[in-house]
Length: 215
Image 1 (cartoon, rainbow, N blue to C red):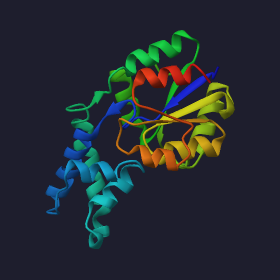
Image 2: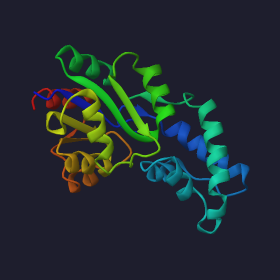
Image 3: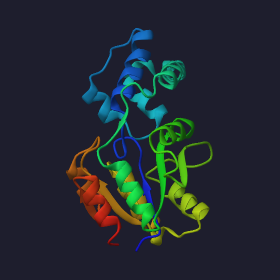
Image 4: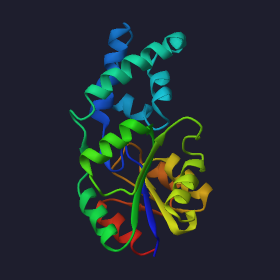
């Protein structure tokens, strides 16, 4: 059995789309730029906040990236839990894994301070580590963050599984040598997960729990 289960955050354990959508559009509206639909913002998420804002701005407004990012961060930090909620069964999944001796952690491209705040609010005491975007560590799909996280917890990636809703999560796991599980309820489609080489794709937290306890 694996010794550690590592989870992506946005689109995997938490549905954060509503608050991210609102913050992106607040920044665009403040700067007089076009706003975006929820579906459009959903496609922009996954590569860190700087890339999210870069994608949200018109192509000829790259000079506004730093200003837009500052506006976004300020708004998001004060509206981080307006719409955000856990996906069904996630808390029960984490409790089940921990009861079997599997340690649980988060690895996300989201800014680390925001990731820690959300993890503690919705899943207090259920994660042994929460790693997010931070200086000096490459974002997913680089395996660097996962390797460092496993080292911190005292395991090798071979003893761990990474679960997430996007190609970035699957590619990270594969590059590090960990098991790779996709989830179908997040911000990307099953086809993307399959094409990235997912070892398993879960349609529910219960299915993911069973898979993680079987490897």
